[in-house]
Length: 90
Ligand code: SF4
Ligand code: SF4
Image 1 (spheres, helix red, strand yellow):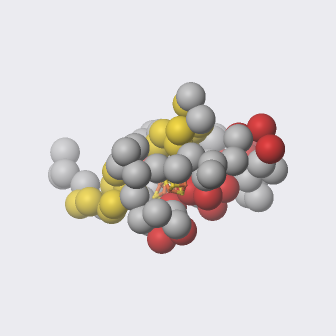
Image 2 (cartoon, protein in one colour; image 1 turned 30 degrees about the vertical axis):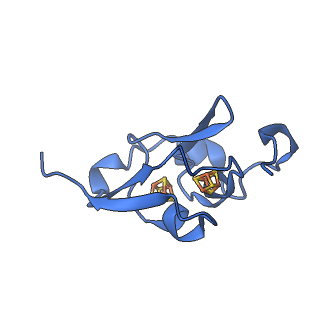
Image 3 (tube, protein in one colour; image 1 turned 120 degrees about the vertical axis):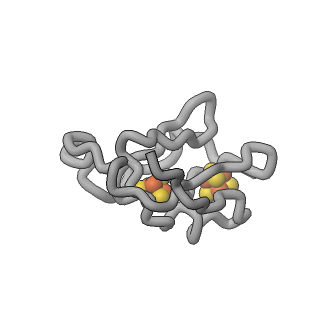
């Protein structure tokens, strides 16, 4: 059963400073979330070191302006519903 976002503590990293720097251009791999498998546990949100995951209607949504593609969310997701795919060269 999923835990509501309001019951979770704030992310353990510095939230304000992380959003000051857009790290999206660093990315070589991009997290893509399968919403069908997501249980809304928000583990990915808690672990993201760049605070690059927003919560929209209780679901995690990656903000690619800040996601640097570290893959921690994918590693930590208990349902393995975040895949890291090669970022297209632009
Ligand atoms: S960790 Fe996985 S199951 Fe939990 S909210 Fe994130 S994507 Fe969904
Ligand atoms: S790959 Fe996941 S954990 Fe890493 S910055 Fe992007 S959203 Fe955050």
